[in-house]
Image (cartoon, rainbow over all chains, first blue to last red; front, side, top):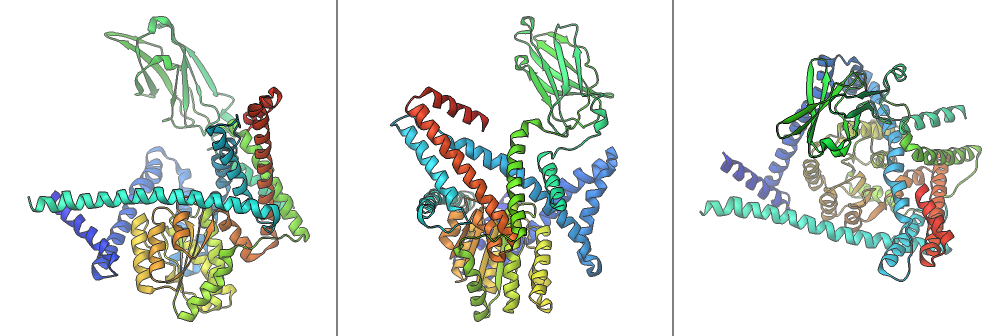
Length: 205
Length: 397
């Protein structure tokens, strides 16, 4: 049974990799198979991990009938199937977008804004590496912030500080790019390791 | 003005005090219970955890010398049900939080201290209920910052409504929107718009939907097909509404095709595989990647590049931006994406919000420069007064 699984996984891996040559029936098969399987999987997952434990069980076991309100908003999303009452689904969408925007405000203040300010107020203690590092962080944050200043044309002082800012951004992108490419190569190595050690070598004993 | 004031108050109450509210009339009755145990000489302080949503109870105790070297179990009693919530703990910890309780339900607790064959049991505590608080006092600093930000927004929006005009600088990627749509039209190819794998509650997805409205309107004016393969069903539904409205605004409701805004799958790489396949078969002339993207970003952008489409990307995910910069023709970096909708629409109210954001940035830059000067004079030149000022600034922030 495990062998069959390995053969299926190896076959589908090769089907997906065939896309590197060009679009072909093998890739189309693997793509459709993957999309279909994952859509079905997420349907079951949503029922098993959201609807069942967060709606059905609390209502049935604990009588938390207040949950019928979000259930109602969920159900009216299905009104899109009936064009005459499709507008009802906008209530749910408006509710979700509103909650997302509202919670996002404090989320960003607490998660990004205040910690970023805290992490940038750093001491300069003299001529040493730590101070140089702190200075780079302070200059980098200030100039990057000024790059994202929109209500004035980037000329004069604002022009050159924002140019320094975009330079910092691009250096950070370069470092991030290299780091992520390394991580992706390790994923590729993992896949080749699977193909060679779990699939090819057992075939030839 | 009254409507704005009401909206402003609603935002504050939603965002800062987003705690589950439980029957507040009970708060005064059973907020805290303190129970003293007799046999072991240990005092268990059992109380509702403050500043939470009413789903935890805190148990505190002071260990005495006679119980050094013992291991501790804590039990929760609810009706007939006795559940061990902590096993073999080091009692010197002095505190344990039970996060597995339901708000408004009575619970009692007792502890067992074990060493070899010796077991010492405390008495049951008095019943305690977990109560949700209206205000999380630990977030007071965020509340102040939020007030400042909301005040700045309200003020500049008020000025915009009064007729004051505001300037917004050129954003390169957005001037290319028309070029991209025009190119697709000339080539007789569709436009593909990807909102990434975010949900409709994510800010970048909301920004992406706003830009979608503008792109869809252009597409309708040029009579070009626009495809929006979606990761999330709610995002798909919202995108359908946005595209439909854009086509109606452009005077072409007949050209709107609901089936072009379709659901793919909610699996990250399943979505990437599906969209890649669509790109190869439909060969769109322009691809917009505007929203929340993660590891699939390069897979999508590279495929778009390989078919020769003009690509305009934008996301706030800093780890993915390098890939977009490398593989796309234009990239909106972080907040540029948020400003994009303002730049495209030039609506006075939205321009007011951009000016407010800029004011907040200037305040932050000002604080950072003060911090830098105090840090330099205090720690670099060892001037005591400035050292104290620097430490004070660090403390208040």
